[in-house]
Image (cartoon, rainbow, N blue to C red; front, side, top):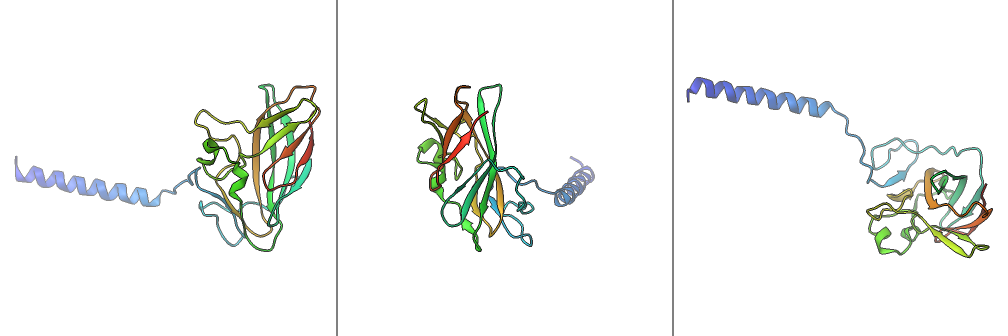
Length: 190
């Protein structure tokens, strides 16, 4: 091989490497979905590099249930869908004056759910008339269909959360929402 062509190849490789490095440095990395959700004060950023969560909750509140260490769950909507699911949306708020660690007990004690990290996977709906308990749905890998990656909530801040359950029969008009370490709350179903 000719030395002149070898040098041109090396020089070309070096220029390409520098160009790729420069492009890579300018790119903004997107936060990963498996990073813990952390709410902090407005002067700080979350561990995932995202902006802090808003402390403003949706105006409609269906129910509020209180947990330990100043945690409160305000449920903003309970919706059935045509596919046979019931989705609950709300805000997990820290009402205390210091950051609070989200208890791992909220994930429940099922091995399949717990292995996917902190979540609201321990929540259940109880239909006392129909004598049935509904658990948070799971995907094919066993991950709960609920907010996950929860670690802590900053003082006086909220994190938007959701939970998805199988929908009780249309004749069921109310259920008891139960989340470990929180008071039960009665939810009206339409």
